Image (cartoon, rainbow, N blue to C red; front, top):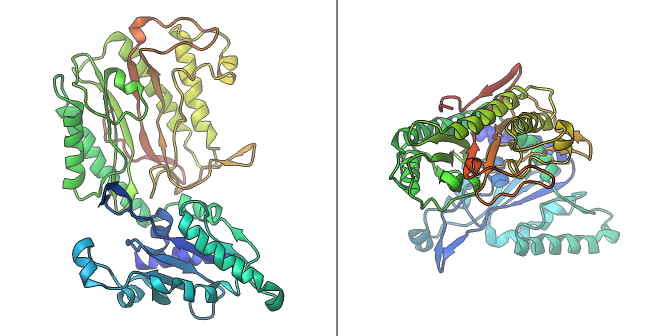
Length: 429
């Protein structure tokens, strides 16, 4: 992967010209009191460096004569490492990560100006780390104060996110290999959950079986908090309590995926734990499945992003009208979003280093992002008829037989040169 990271940096530097880009590692996060969560590197930082330690800064200065890629890292310190883990250190980081120069993080204030003073702008994302924002702003203001005498220096701070997100949107073969591995492990976990789940067991027991396979197969663990929602719990989109006992006749919605090498899978399946749908469950499940099949068919290079969602919405709204859950002209129902009490979220998102991965969905007010090969996305329509749900204004009342049913079906889909590949197809649906 050494060459892969270098190629990414070179591509970004070709986009920023005479600018200097600054990236800060992720902060450590506290679970409670003095106990920290396991460290997870900032995705942009990792994408460009592969460096997986806190208290680090990466600088890309394509205009610098000697040091185009610079790292600031924690030095070796055996007294601290015995408590919190091994550090690469300054000397080893240069060779291992291909940096032109590496400094101790304590020298950031001293060394950073020489990589900024000849830049025409600073590329940095403000707002994620306020204490580090102040450092960047202090250096920028100091350089701007001397601009009239020097006639050079960064005259602006520009967010690197639009440039870098566009690069991250298209996955390389190496990235796809990691996503496929995350998918393979997650598929096995879902298949096992389908066999393990039964009335009388608890949601957390199913969760434990899923996450056992995640770690057993070498993943980093869940890519996000696993959702194991039985019965009416499935009507809560981000239900993560997973405490209820599964009852005979329940549908079980499982939304779970693992992270492998920092790349993620994201799969949802809904099935009857007793092995057979009730008539109402089957009708709604078939409707969601048809919406998903038709939405996945829209994953074609050249199609606009919104075509996936619009297709799912049309199928779902038509079905809800046929069932008497909605009434009126189809086009008006869609335009006025009368379907939203039953389907309130979008049909998918980009997938990669982040579960909701980098990349825009809309270009300006009217144009949508175009699909092209190498993008990976989820397609996940659903219907949720919560026990307390109220119909939209002017819509018919909701019969009790539909209440408490929540269904979502989600697959991970790769845009290919000739269409698409459903990476998660091995999980029954």
